[in-house]
Image 1 (tube, rainbow, N blue to C red):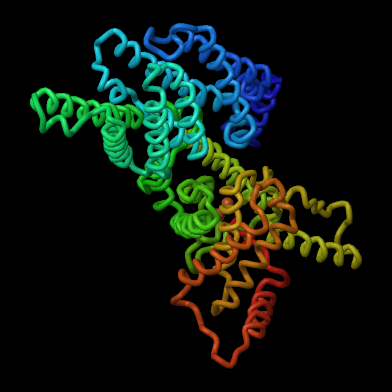
Image 2 (spheres, rainbow, N blue to C red):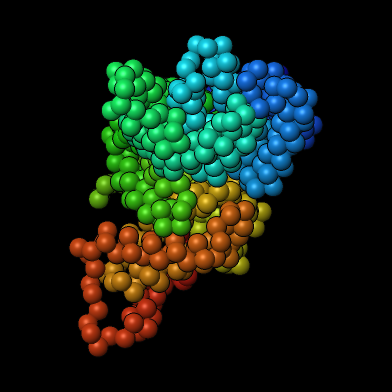
Amino acid sequence: MGILDAIKRWRLTQQGLSSGKKRRVYCENALIQALENSLWVKLALFMSFTVSCALMVLNSAPTSTFAADPLRGALYGFIISVTAVVMFQVSLQNTCHRNSRVVLVFGVLVCHLLLVQLAMALVAAGHIQDELQFFFIPFALAPILLGVLLGRAVGAFSAVFVTLIGCLFAPRPETINYMILSLISGVVSVLLAHEVRKRLQLLKAGIYIGATTLLLGILLGRLDIASCFGTDPVQHLELLATGSAAAFGTAVITALLISGLLPAFEGIFHLTTDISWLELSDLNHKLLRRMQLEAPGTFHHSLVVASLAEAAAEKIGANAQMCRVCSYFHDVGKLAKPGYFIENKLDGEENPHDGLTPTMSALIIISHVKDGVDLSVKHKLNPRIINVIQEHHGDSIVMFFYRKAREQKKNDLEKVDRRLENPEDLPMVDEKNFRYPGPRPSTRESGIIALADAVESASRTLKKPTPAKIRTLVDDIVLARIQDGQLDQCPLTLRELGAVRECFAVTLRSMLHSRINYPKEEDAPSSVARRAASDRDSSQGGRVIPMPKRA
Ligand SMILES: [Fe+2]
Ligand SMILES: [Fe+2]
């Protein structure tokens, strides 16, 4: 098929009907996708985790709780790890449905437990003093890493299970102390790792976790401050200093290690943290700089969409940083033919669509989605940005040119009636040719950006905007999108859509503030809304449509 396609393309190029170039498309490798969704792979991963936990307890240090009866310890390790798997499957299924996430979560848990086991082995071998044994354990490793990468719920899950399984390695009289230290340090780590947007925040988290571990160590009697004032204070002060340095050092090194490893984890597991979204929001990206110069209208439109989408996402608890960055890039495909989009047309400039048939105009407008994917694949943009570019119009219709085509057909049919035109020469007007290829928005963020895009485009057509007109405009657009089925695959609930509408109206009102004509006091809100609707209807010839030419 590939060779036949190439020959076909070559022949078209020879005839001057094709540029010979092929658009890049974004698709995941079929084998990787099969492995990601395979139930057998998932079962194998769960099995490996439970067996690893049992083996770790079986080989734990001679001072550990189950050193005298390792088989019993291994059985306990197996039972707790099976509980972890069941909890994971029941409560974290939505976050971790892909097998790569299972590898990440359970891989990090095993690494954390191996480090705990190593610390215990060093204590048993006499390389670390008994009093300092807990200050060398990186309690924050799994909770911070998983909290930053996959969210608070997964971070809390890891904090609980590294504590429960780790208790099996701890020396018998210290089991409760270990449990308290590990659990509290883990929970503090998860709380501090929430919405980390700068790497410096991770370093601060490390210092706070170090302080927490040290304080708990003192409270649990691992370090005795009172002894520093008794006999042999130098030795006790030395122990206190070593303990403090170990607690802070371990926590800070853990935080720095996580900060350094995050980009690698994000790349391997196709994840994007808030830190990366913030770094990606830099407007100096090559494509955005090109947009500023070659398509300034589109660039301004993207900035407004970003503000609308970010505010709405924040209101409903969606990923606001992601919405901002994806909005910047959503119309990057317009760079291929910027002059064909109305926002880039200067006053008095000739409209390039005047010399084109409506079908050809729609084809050019629609192509900005595929051109956007091509450009973003070429510039190696984040896959989630590419998804938003693909989905931001769903399979909606380019209404302006569809209506124009139907009107032209109506006029041509009148000519046929007057025998001025041959009916066989009339072009077909098929709705399919005026629809975007889709897919429809599949995430909350994608849905919000699609709505913000339509609302921003339509808001420019508002003559003499008033708060009531803005509200009606937003409501009509959201309703039109719902009725067209564009949000059918998007997990936004009706309650969230209500909050998004409210937020769009407020943000637009503040953006258009200088243009707003506030109604006089005697104007009832209902009459204002009616007038706003009639104004817009008269200007757009019917119901509100997402600005067609802007696309
Ligand atoms: Fe677009
Ligand atoms: Fe747009």
